[in-house]
Length: 68
Ligand SMILES: [Zn+2]
Image 1 (cartoon, rainbow, N blue to C red):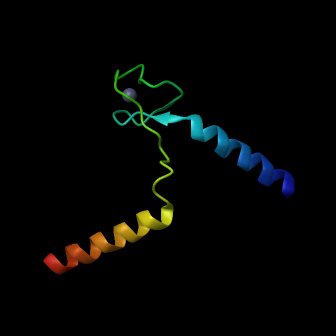
Image 2 (cartoon, rainbow, N blue to C red):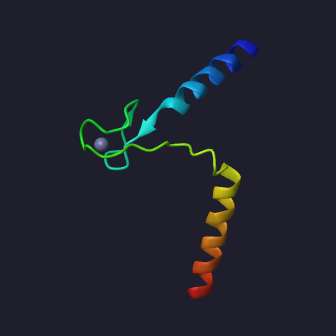
């Protein structure tokens, strides 16, 4: 069980180095997408936690409901 968790942590650490192309949504280690020649972005910005994202989403739904 512990071994699995360690492996997971390692893969997550590896993912931090991965970037995603905003155009084709492909993961790459490069700063520029070799296909689209656009700047790749970090798929998991440390600024936003999943909780914050969820809260933002909920607020957005609330707002939309208010309009409708
Ligand atoms: Zn691309």
